[in-house]
Length: 209
Image 1: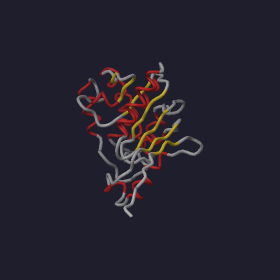
Image 2 (image 1 turned 90 degrees about the vertical axis):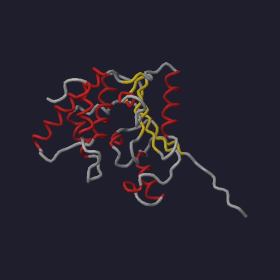
Image 3 (image 1 turned 180 degrees about the vertical axis):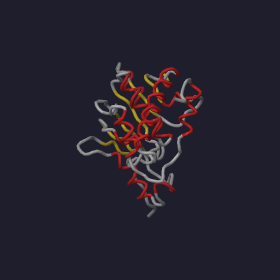
């Protein structure tokens, strides 16, 4: 095992590939299966969009905390320290907990690679797995989850949300999501789940007569 302390935990996370040539949820699914499917049985609010999703996550988290709930928050990127990306009631995941979670993931990835040498998870898939397992272990009442990129094939999209939120949609990450607004909107809409509510930003465009 290479992860022994905080610095080696961060080094392990950042050593994972940034992207994978195949866009799917198979890798994060296999890793979460190995961890006991920690995303199941939890309550989530799932947020995507081009602009404003970070602000929405922050506001919703604060509103839920004000009701007395134990609220998880998953965001990216961080401002001053990596741990900010995973927090409960605004308190970032402690170093010791981060180390323990990454050790658990390193062990399961090694086991999966022993069965399939081609198996590899990305950096964001690793962080997402840490988040799901940490929130499960800490028994949060609800977690507000910010999508990394897009939505459809984002590693957070293995959850079933209490409500999905899509903020304003514009041209972003076109090399990954597609060249048009329609293609990008299709990826964002991938977080919508049947029989679960959706909050959608609607903008009225006024034309000059």
